[in-house]
Amino acid sequence: MGRLEGKNCIVTGAAGGIGLETCILFAREGANVLLSDISGPALEKALETLKSKVPDAKKLDTKVTDVSKESDVEAMVKHVDSWGGLDVIFNNAGIMHADDADAIDTPEKIWDLTQAINVKGVWFGSKHAVLSFREHGKNKASVINTASVVALVGAATPQLAYTASKGAVLAMTRELAMVHAREGFRFNALCPAPLNTPLLQDWLGDDAAKRHRREVHFPTGRFGEAVEQAQAVLFLASDESSFVNGTDFVVDGGMTKCYVTPEGPATAPPKNNAR
Image (cartoon, rainbow, N blue to C red; front, side, top):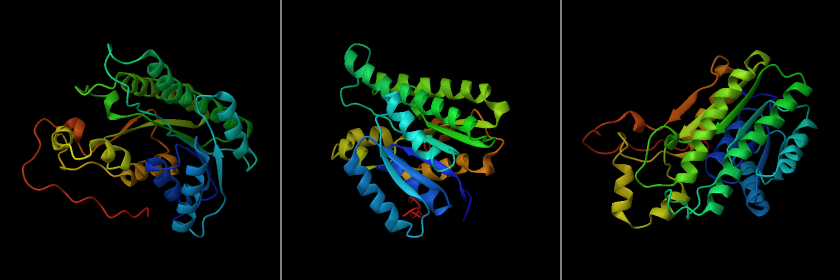
């Protein structure tokens, strides 16, 4: 415990999934946490959940933010500046739109919306984080940006706007890591595999073929859990990763390294120790 003791942290996309699990872990490790998302009601529900899981949490607050708007992102960071300056930001907010398809069938408005949230949102978050780090004299600061394994491998179930946006996140994160390394600001990209979240499970539904087409690629025989991603984010946020910079931090159960999956039963998911 105490791996983020006294650090001021922002998590975007905090209302559920990886974002909420990360907020829970950050709070348990002594951080002051600002939960940010586009939905006010969803944020309030997430805050209630966080308080119930971590009753002795330190400073917690929420900020409704549209990360595609720079003024919103600037206000979000300024909110934490009032706490004494930002130490960690997890640029996690993103979308994968149901109308996202291939080069022929993806509507231009869906392409533009996806890039605005997934790419510009990370840019704005990184930009205003750096300005805060400098203003408050932070020489140990961490930025974690959510990318995806689809930025590393191709998929025959196309989501072109999403895939392109996550490739941009990887490239941007690497460059920012080099540009700001001498200032002590670390930038790393999280690359999750498909996860066992309500969003994915609702989308897969009872379609066994659709589910099998994805599960078959996991050596573990199962989807990942959001808390398994949050554990990686916690490491990247903490000083334990002080020499980790510019990485594509892949948390995928070995999916991107697998040619033929093992035979036998699937491994059981871990007990959710973030809850």
